[in-house]
Image (cartoon, rainbow, N blue to C red; front, side):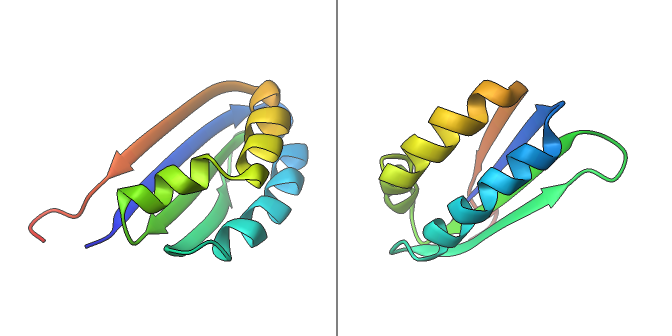
Length: 94
């Protein structure tokens, strides 16, 4: 079974947020249990969507405690956002 997280960020600083998320994605993909970490942008708006997949919820919890998450996401990205929604998902029928 996997654990999926979809984060939706609204920002007037989309290019800067995407720039900051580049190193974040690289570091996250090297974490134990991380299967996928992809950054997407809205076609018509300032939305940034991150799709993450981990082996388990514990792996995601460890990700949230990592140095790069604390420094980049909490320290640099979150202050640039007007809205942040994070949805934690598990597969249906697994």
